[in-house]
Amino acid sequence: MEDIWQKASEAAAYISERIAVNPEMAVILGSGLGELAYEVNDRVEIPYSEIPHFPVSTVVGHSGKLVIGKIYNKNVLMMQGRFHYYEGYELSEVTFPIRVFALLGISSLIVSNAAGGINKKLNPTDIMLITDHINISNISPLRGPNNELFGERFPNMSEAYSLRLREIAKDAALYKDDPDAKIDFKDKILEFAKDVADSEYDAKIELKEGVYAFMRGPQYETPAEIRMLDILGADAVGMSTVPEVILANQLGIEVLGLSCITNATGSGTKPTHEEVIENADKGAAKFKQLVMRIIRRM
Image (cartoon, rainbow, N blue to C red; front, side, top):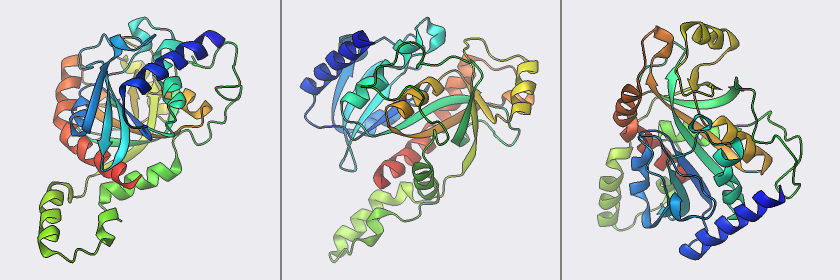
């Protein structure tokens, strides 16, 4: 475990040398959702391949780089692409960036994914606010010797997805309590400019809620597995997120989870990766607006 502390420290030191800001929050962008990174101002892009000890994304739809800069004057770090257990990585590698985030001083994490909808009320391009998860894989990134420098041996997971951040997300979807609404624009020209700038973001976004189930993949679920997940109370299923969330909770990082529903698994359709990417692309604009509103309020 001392070895992974050393590796994470070296990666964090390398990133710190490349950037001029100290990121406050991180965003992990799932399949097809990487466009949000282009909203980052004054950004610095660092390919994973240049960061000491970082894995490299091998999945179509994952660019494989860190983007660091500002959104609404908030210092953010975004991962364009993540790592998966099914790629052959150990969970210590899948979750390695979360350790690096902690050493960079990041205190909050927005984690997103493309997921199959089990609940029949979920449709492709819907956004689901993750309220909890089910770790069907029965594997954990905390397996093995524990280094107290990273956190306690048995972290509490009773609020794995921050209630505070979930309330912020719901307000953002309704476009409630806009931070700029309290600003008194004495200059009418500036007020007009603000209205124009915000016009594309002033619509309500339907935000559904549910439980996310983690399966190892890479194969999609069988009909019997979908029925099992439905009985267990899962609303959506995917092949990521949960290992990162478990480690983030151990490290004391506050987590918000969002799923972009890319296929209606619960309806008995036959999903394909092409369909997942296509529907993630279709939902990307809505997802981008929502996350930017959330960042503005954090």
